Amino acid sequence: MQKGLRIYAAVATAIIAIAILTSYSGTRTGSSNGGNNDSLPQVIKSVNLNRSFDFAKEPVPTQNFDVRERLEKELLINSYLHANTLINIKRTSRYFPMIEKILAENDLPEDLKYFPVIESNLSNAVSSAGAKGLWQFMKSSADYYGLEVNEEVDERYHIEKSTRAAIKYLKDLKKRFGSWALVSAAYNLGPTRLASDIKLQRAESYYELNLPDETMRYFFRLIAVKDIFQNPQQYGFYLDDDSYPPLDNYKIVEVKTPILNLGDFAREHGTNYRMLKIYNPWMIDSKLSNKAGKLYEIKIPK
Picture 1 (cartoon, one colour):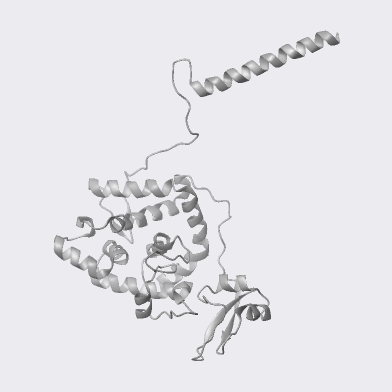
Picture 2 (cartoon, rainbow, N blue to C red):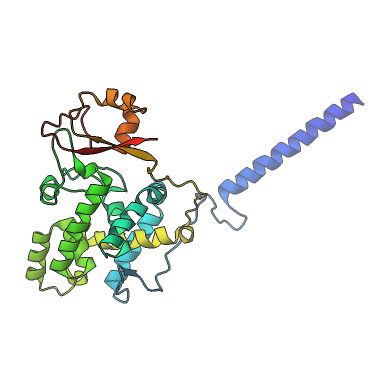
């Protein structure tokens, strides 16, 4: 009986092993009709372009094949740039409410909130050219729009102040160039260079211009990010209430005197150096000399 059971078990095990190997072989080599199923487990789809697109209420002329193809490229790139796009969507909960509020105060289109997504991935990034912060200001532009930049303070990293400066810059560009499409090109390329190219090429709109590749892509990236962020599930992005919360639970400490050590200052106010830097990224040194006795508002997380 036991011997018979052992033989039966051995035969059954052999049959199961053969079945598993056969199944695996079939998966590797394809079906009996010679098809090859050795593929990655993903679905890559085209984007539906048979609908209207706009940015800041300016319609995008997708009936133009060149416009259509450039838009499709950015939609596909940002759709399948999975981790980066998902993290950016999560970050919108932290930054967009503040940006939307400032845009509304200045009677500007809400779509302009997508500029820092393109510029910095909604982070205090540093470019190879030296542009810094959420809105990627160069030092000369930061100085012009009233942001303090020195060895201890860099307000390009101050979320609210840099946003207000960027809004002023965007308003100035809109007055000069007329359309938000051209504003985006000027923001990326620089207004002087853009004005020169418009004159040289006899262009009457953004879509008639031939510009450096990054600038050619810039406006279409704005449109693509807007569409993906407004319709994330249509592009395969699902969030279960786990976006990054705004950093709005803090108190303000006003300082007019020097701070010799920010670590000591943080401890004195019930926090730590790391949290102090997260809430006040504009303080770029370990101290705040403040020789001029300027009033600074420092956020202390509660």
